[in-house]
Length: 268
Length: 97
Image 1 (tube, rainbow over the protein chains, first blue to last red):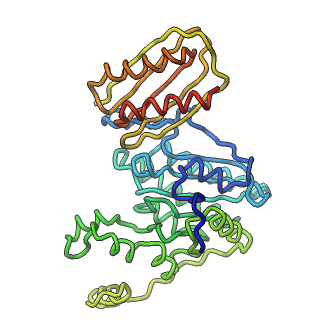
Image 2: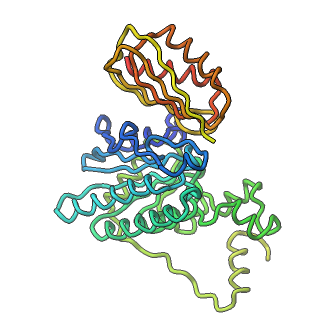
Image 3: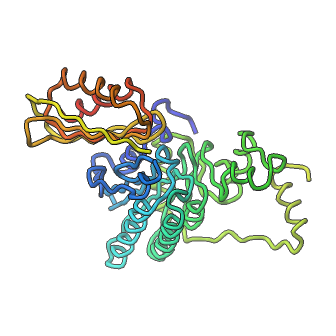
């Protein structure tokens, strides 16, 4: 876990992350910015759209094997998934499944950096996430699906469910995985329950190290491109079957809360 | 509301290839620059910060006075400052040449 200055994954944008995850010189983007697959809903709400709708789909090879890297751009609207970007992700997964069924497996990497569903597209975003979940489960029957969570946003909302469906989840210490984002929890439950401005608390509860310790992530690596690439290759070579995390039974909700707080090192 | 601005400039040189730079994020903008078959430059700016038409004009006037290239240029802006826009323009041209 020795960091190499200048080879950070987090500092790359989505397109450069995809390029760096693929074998050198093999990056080829599908529906690139010049395809102008913009969201048709944002302008009406006074929000400027982006030419790739915040999703990069790249084909190439990974460890010499056909591969597809799907990367969300955490800088554009927090990487939130709308109808167009969601369709790009779901369709890519679907194509990979069809190829797998024809005996042409493809290594699929979800390089996610996203706040979840794009609120401006509400129900369409929800539908997109359902389609993506469906596609991941269908693809998983044929080959492993690997998620890399190593960006500045992390993975929240519906997209955290997508992450939970992946065979392997590679995280860095700076990564975060959570269903409700810190601000959502604070708004719902109050700052006494969860102070979203307390960054150590946010990482203590949703950070990469915690998620790895809990088994929600399968590898914890440094924010270093060669380390992340090695972890991705390792994930495909090991070809782990998908194992659902068993949820302990708590007959008493109060007991569950106590156990939860203890698990986070907080005295109930 | 989003404001859409259009500009045209005379051109005397070409670019080799298209270029994509930037991102639609706070204080930043995305540029799509392509070679234009006609002998002028046409620019479309979509910006979330309305009321800065004259500033956009000044930044683009200066760029196309220095580089009279025949391009189709689309800019999607999320509140980039004139300095950031000028840098993005140069970056796009560097990639397109």
